[in-house]
Image (cartoon, rainbow, N blue to C red; front, side):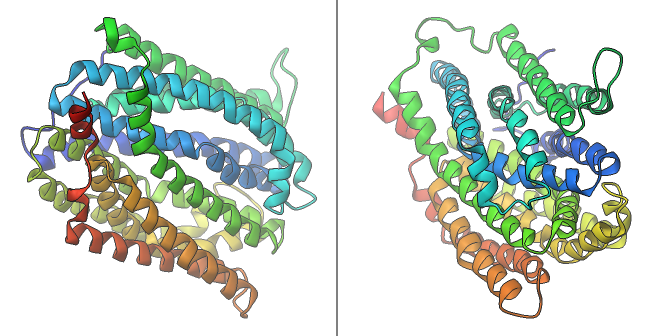
Length: 459
């Protein structure tokens, strides 16, 4: 499998965005579908309790991987900037350091997760009739953290080099493997006994290991790390830069995930049917915002390469076309989600009560899809420039200053009940969009230290 490196510092911005974004859309679709496969098999054939067990595990998993998601974002930022600046040795040092960190952090988080797993499940108020199933599923999923981290870091490297196709191809193979293995391990086949929800988790871990192996092997085979000499030496400078750019992203993702954990805990107070409906609705919502997320990732890579090459004037064009592309697609997806909400929720469950709860959730959640599209574009600009601290602050304000307090108040102190949680979600997104747009217009992100230039001064 050959790596397809692309230079975004020349040529038409709109063409680069489209060609880079669409493989990412499919890739993110596969990523969510990859996670949704468990929900499909479990919800359809093992019942609402099992579906709820899978649903309550996802926010915890997301919380534990938040730091590595930050390192992954930092990897794309630094790799794209070094590539744009033509600093090959620094580029390879960053790649080697990020792969090393993915393994080290993966081992640490897996161990801590195993030690504190039951306490984490208690924190999110997992219903008593779901707890044992959630414990089993969550425990096995922890074993997939190391390969999952490796795949995401290797993918971040390739995207920084302008290659969005190779990670998508590998993810496609892994997703197909997960689709095949899920029913085999859930229901049993030949010498493999039926394992139920445990089998769903095992199939996912095996598929994650497969994708990590392919992606890392591809990087080694194509000699991305082939410069030799000092380019393979792990130094404090690379580690420092990765944490300086990635830590705010990691903290941001952690606080977002903790916010979802808190929201999940609020939802769990209303019973397992609401929890299952929420879980199914979140899966649908995850598919719906994929185009916006993909465009945001593409924006970060384009901005990183152009800033590394000293072509900051092209950034404005990236924002305009990114907003048109992401916002337009998200609007169409919103119409589909609202029109076919019942049919979409029915993909994950046959329980009528769960379907009703999921449909109600979607009617509120879909209001924020276009808002998130622009948020992801602006966030991509800031991440590509290496200004991740400001995004973290704005996210904290919108999540913990607006969405969480509003959700708690409306659901517990008014007659809205759980619909108060649903209402708080688009209002929080609107707050985040206003903050990021003002920050972009003020231009303060241009004055922040750009990682590649800072690195050059230190050398």
